[in-house]
Image 1: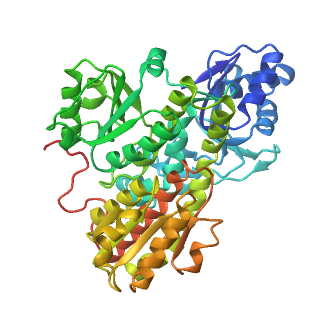
Image 2: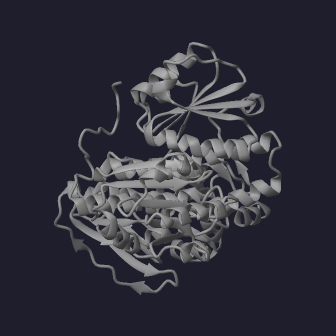
Length: 522
């Protein structure tokens, strides 16, 4: 949404990390804010600097020196209506050059219906754009050269952003999808979590939560249960929608019934929602598609801002569902005093570190590809995890079977000896998720049991783990941020592993056989 201060109108993608300090300083100078977004700070900084210099470029140069974070910004000055100024730093921004018309967007496909001459901006670029010209300079004000490139690809090719498949593109879009989902939910100056679409009374009255979903959304719900029980101290049940709608259920007005669906049109989830609504209890939907059936049927809806997800196997929608569930847990936990202000602040600070940590995970794709090359020819896989890592094991196994057609089962690691251990031999690879937790050593004992039976182990571990690497060479490491939030990092290598196995097997990654993006029938 555009924000205005004085003569300046600003739109912005990204996160201003030092928003709190800047806003406090601006308020002392007499600036009045109309919103809680970090974008408005940019408009006020521009206005403040412009009042002194009456020079747009100078005001922009002084403003960018004060900003910390990632940002793609478009600026319009009322005194200079023929120009739009663009700024790029760690957030995508491209310019399209036409005939007496120029364009800008965060992604190239948006421009291709207008022009094939594209200027790919780099971090630290500032562009002065008018209908018939553009000028580039850096953050020091020095003029630089940026030439348009002729892009001779179709719109459908461009929509993949240069990636061979939509799924891979969407895996790589997760840092941006996470930022877009989280940024409007956090009030940095007070370290408060905001859900304006939900009444305050709801957070005070709820003493139980039922999560109802299918497939990948169900796995997100299982992770959410850990958040609600450990952070909010609220007992939480998670149900598969296709089972829930046919069993005997008990309803309570102090229970929140939470429905998760990427498409918002999943048939079983929608039917379960209608069943619950008939019993006059509060319902909340988490969806990615605006105006979908589930979003309009529920009493309240929270939208993930993952953007369109074309690949049948859900990736970025899953990450944004986890982000919303975590924020809800923080909100409930703070309102019911299960967490302190200090704990809330620490959680939010950890949350803001996730996008860069995700990018770090994505840079390890070559290691994951090498491991996939070693294992893609196996016909069966076992995935193991404990605690919050068990739902991740379920999701990792689902991804592998969905797109590579390799049979994969997931078990809670403590259950391995109750049956699955009989399957383990040299033909059964076992992917063990053992990121840091209070069950880390117990999971290592599971690895030892697998190796004792000639099983092959792939270990997904925290980057500082010096113990698990003693037992297997096939190791995937993820950064350590927070025991809860590390799930958002662990899912990326699981998705990439499934993707590379599918590509190596030659399957249709984006449209796997017998599957549909939205399951709208029973």
